[in-house]
Amino acid sequence: MPTFWSSIAEHWHIARTLRHLAIRFRPELCAGDHFCYEVCPVGCWMPDEAKNKAVLSHAERCIACGACVLQCPHNAIELE
Image (cartoon, rainbow, N blue to C red; front, side, top):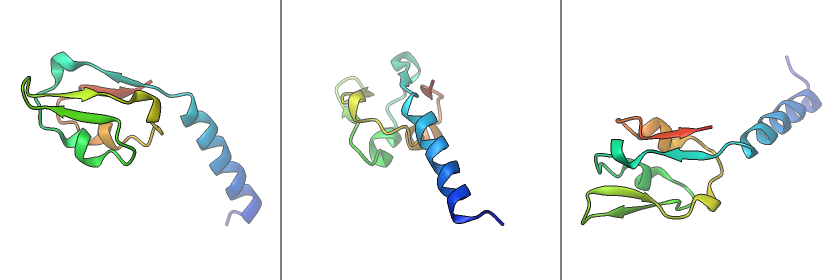
């Protein structure tokens, strides 16, 4: 069983790794399902109803949680 400090160290390592990830969005693959918009906890996405696409409007807010990546059925979003 991990100790308190080993758990903290593991979480710190994960947080430091995620901080270096960035969203890569390929709008040509987007089908406008807007799942990314619905699940993003920090509001990185906006729906563009006119083009039936999602728009990565606030990439600087991204916390690399991966929710949008997991919910996109068309693989239009990746974390790199």
